[in-house]
Image 1 (tube, one colour):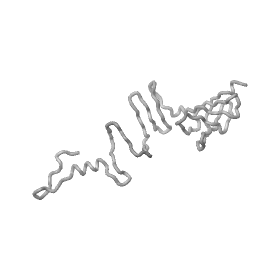
Image 2: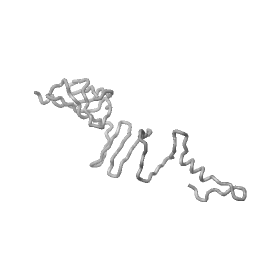
Image 3: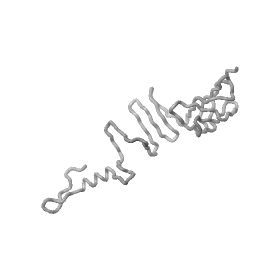
Image 4: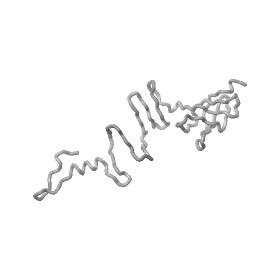
Length: 171
């Protein structure tokens, strides 16, 4: 058995993510190409790598006919400058969940973030929002800014005719 046939650096040429175990077409040294090589991903994590991503392929027993890719990385998109102990989940367009030493930062890269399939969302901390908040959005709800404007400009019929003044404290 040749030890040099056990492990090889590779680049991803194609990825097929439609089956239970992703398969890759990989290119190795000396132009060797392998099709349908299984990509073993850590439980709970998956990705669809771009062509050109780099990996490590392992060939049990040195048999090049049935290898597995055990890791794929892509230096083109990797986050840099993390502090010791920090962790991040990221993609190629700038979306990121970064567990920093100061707290968790979630970046949406200008795309919507949606939380689904939960009967309740509970937040056990004060909430600050730099944008507007809308309730019952699916049924034509109102924004907090709109509710505030209505409150600040409302009045009531007065006891002796006419109307009361606007609230003396705005919301």
